[in-house]
Image (cartoon, rainbow, N blue to C red; front, side, top):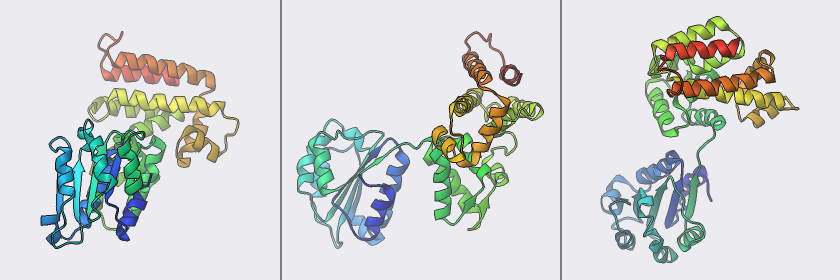
Length: 334
């Protein structure tokens, strides 16, 4: 299996294979590779006769094979991109006979989203032999920050740690959504800009002072006043600050805090690895651990589970979000 940078790097060098299987449960990586191929392999003049985009839901395997066997017209090669190839799941195995002896002047790209081909079957084996296979896996939460930094660095931008955390907290692990927001920022900001929390607030609409990251930090530091200010803001802006997300993020924080207490080696590198967090935020956990001993952490996790049920209407008598938040905060911090 090849990684994304290797595939694109090889293509740039002219090392182009006749078949590419781009699969996995992270659609962003699949789109990035297929978009690069669609934009860069052929010139604009060559694309008219030699580039074709097909869709698995509409195409038949025999149509794909028939087009793949054609010779290019006034170009070195032709490109055929099959998007949503997972829709061909029942018949895609019949591509194996073509891939065994592919047309060398054709670049056939199969975009197989959210799934993977069966490695035990013939098609996977012959693609591995004669082509390139990429499997894009979902990133863990603790990997998203470094990915954001790399994307921006590749475009000659920087970003502050708090701004990274705001994006991760607000946008989750949806790489396509995050990239879209980063792309908007790169359009309006000069190259070499370091993106700050204020820039995020002004352009994406995430409050730099009143968000789940700041709430978690205020709770960890037992800053009752600030924590109450934040939940009051949440209550006034429930659409942008859904209770279920706040509970989920707090539950993750206290679960990790429980793990922190259990660690014998509390060095920064070890904590970052074991808790799957960025080293930048290890201090937040060590500070919170002083305020919340393991026994209290266990109680808080139970309180959060109870709040989660109430937020879903179980035993809450339809309490408004503001009341649930206040009750939750009081139980956690007292």
